[in-house]
Length: 533
Picture (tube, rainbow, N blue to C red):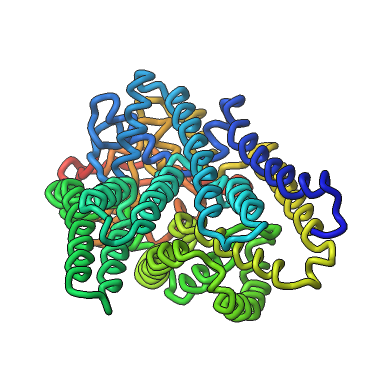
């Protein structure tokens, strides 16, 4: 950075990224000082499902919801067990349990940022700006809105990113040694690591497949001995991770009839138009995946700006990255043989065959660190190769702009508190429903955490509701339960497609301003039709 004093360079290269890291830490820790915010700022409705199941485990009720009366596998197992341990330590206390979970997630996010810095410092092109770029990559990831949201939801997403980064750190260590010096124990260890990651979230089976296939493709052009070694490495990765994943899949199949959790089956039933899925996936992966720009209003960004900007910049950046490919270390090429196909598999699965648009960012979040490193490397080599850019004040101006825009959104979204739209449902139940009264909701995560006698209706954690949805009889199922109230957002609770509900329930609350509707039972279900608690 010519024409800049040493103190100013230190401020821009170190001070500003550290300021971003501080913003990320403060925003994550502030909810600890407010009971209302610890419950509502970061945990999402699906996160409350996992918390409820974990708490029931700690209380000896097994993997269940609805006060222990409905068994479920609608969760990702490993972090559910970890959360259960935390609740066991505090005797099932709801506030203290969620505080421990919150602190654990913040620590995972900090550890992830550190590993991103270490990986970037090793994988970015060798240059005088490598360390600075690594710090910026880690700081921007840690302080971005997507990172703050997804690392603190009480779901498995934050720990999953950390586990994947640990895997790639170990993988990098192994592939950096000559093939002849790589031991089979190392590949068994990597397979075991992938097996553990599968227990954190089962879509990482794609990662195991990609790693195994990448070893097979490397055998092309090798001699016979090297081919045997690479084939055996692929076998060890696949067999070790597969054997470790098997108990969870057996439990799912024997107890619920499918090898995957019922939550995934229910979400697949909510999938939107395939084109919308691809459009949103492309936008997310190409831009919002790494928040290095101010956050535009989502509709405006998606409808008017995203495609023109991406269509213009993507080919230019790709061509430039190909020209500068020789500057990237061989280790980056080795890592890219895994994370790029893994990204492609996630895209094909979630964008085309599965998922709902409002969860797209969560599905793709684990690959954000590597996109950040890629973007950082491209921008760094672009700055290094252009004397015109170096002579301008573009870098310091952009650095200050990024920090100011990030600080603005931290203040708007996190420092002053963040509204949780599901809070209105549990608040109404707390103020109007006795603890021993049964209620039901489609979005029952937060409601079920605070009101134990809650029946889930969207099928994510309730196999009976899932079967009813498949038979197009969710309305009949709802009236057959013990629920005295149905409480949910207006667009859901007042949906006229749910047959039989108007015959058994009447609307007692319809509040468009709060987006809340409440239905109260007016007719008892018959004993022979009772299906649930």
